[in-house]
Image (tube, rainbow, N blue to C red):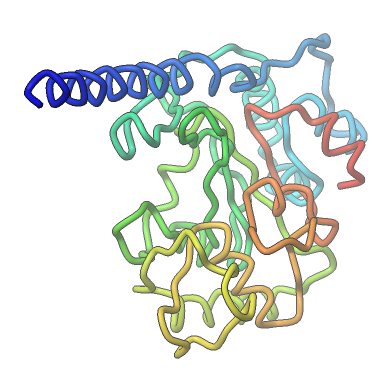
Amino acid sequence: MKTRLKKRVLWIVVSFIIAFALIIILQKFFAHCEGFFTPDYPQADLSEESDYELIFLQTGLGRSAADKLITQGEFQVILDIQDTFFRSADVECVSLLGWFTREDRIEGKVAIPLVDLQPGDIILTLSTHSLGWRHGHAGLVLDEDSVLECVTLGKDSVIVDASHWNTYSNFAVLRVKQSDEELREEVAFYAKENLCGIPYHLSSGFIGEKAPELDAPQFGMHCSYLVWYAWNHFGYDLDSDGGRLVTSYDLLHSGYLEVVQIYGMDPRVFILDGN
């Protein structure tokens, strides 16, 4: 009996060591196969007369962000962003939930400014990864300084400072196409009043209705689902594949959304997607 017990204990210990080693390998190597993007095409000369597609390819700035800077007489900021967009960055993989969930952040100085955050915008990153799966993270912009997020397991949704978003190794700011300012502000107000302090549930949308009422038993949210739920309340289904699980990738490729700004991502992907 003692020998059998020792073998079982040894097997448990060995299994634990193997599992832990596998997690480290997945998180340290596999998760970083497609991380920070640096353009593999030439840096071009830009002017205020450059077309929007060229500006986007060179800076990651969409039409609204580029227009904002140009009309404010800040074309030099566009050129500064272009230089940073083409520059490689030192990326650090930091812990969010031990080795299980980690995220990639820019080391040192903030990489690039957030140019045109408006209420109701969607902001997301693909820098967050669990067990090697780069699932990303998303939030709903309330104003230029704050974002509503489901941050991590075990914590309720909360309003956080927007400044942490441009420390990720990549990010995208998206806006619902042809939506007016009044609607976007209404969505942001609804989310602030109703979706703050909601428990974190990975299973949101899987059981029962995909969009249950707020007072439904065991109602909860995860980051991408929060964004989806807020806009779905106003008749916009931002889940690009229509499945039960809403991910950052589903939001990123939604036909309802256009790019305001990206960083650390390949602009050509968005041009092909029609954004």
